[in-house]
Length: 177
Image 1: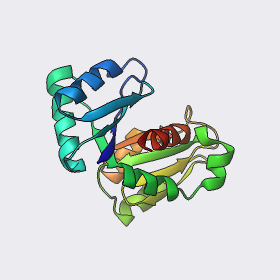
Image 2: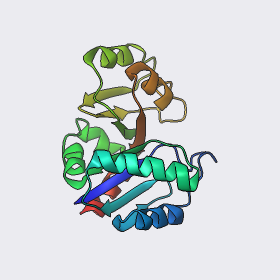
Image 3: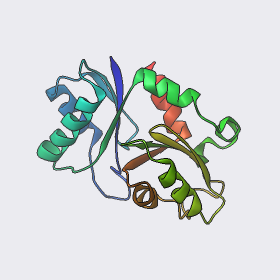
Image 4: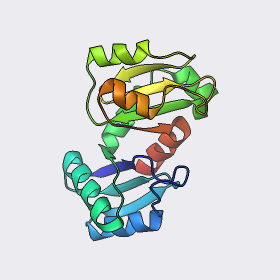
């Protein structure tokens, strides 16, 4: 089965540096087949017979032990990724300004109360929609000055999140086939 693994916050602003060559070598050591990285932000497609949950645990432990990189890993199957892409509620925004649309993967499905609390804290023009274990968020003024950061989302949802812009989401979909 084909999977995507997204590492949270690597190679961003000099923090949590992780060469993609090290990530591919780690994947080979863990018997993840046909591992390929995309961009430099911790995106890897591969094949495995393990479950997504088992792969998240395996990768998080191996990254910490072997690469000294403590970070969350989000694993989805190729089929899940295709459904996530198809479920995008902001198709117009994706077509018009894909670099301002973010897919945010969550470790757990948030409660309705947590989603309401997150919506209530938005002070800018950003908006989002929640679907299962992901948020689709549009940032009309860009990401640089938003108050709707991953730290705020983590706190309001009592969850862990990683984000990719829509251009990256589509590159991953292409890589997964």
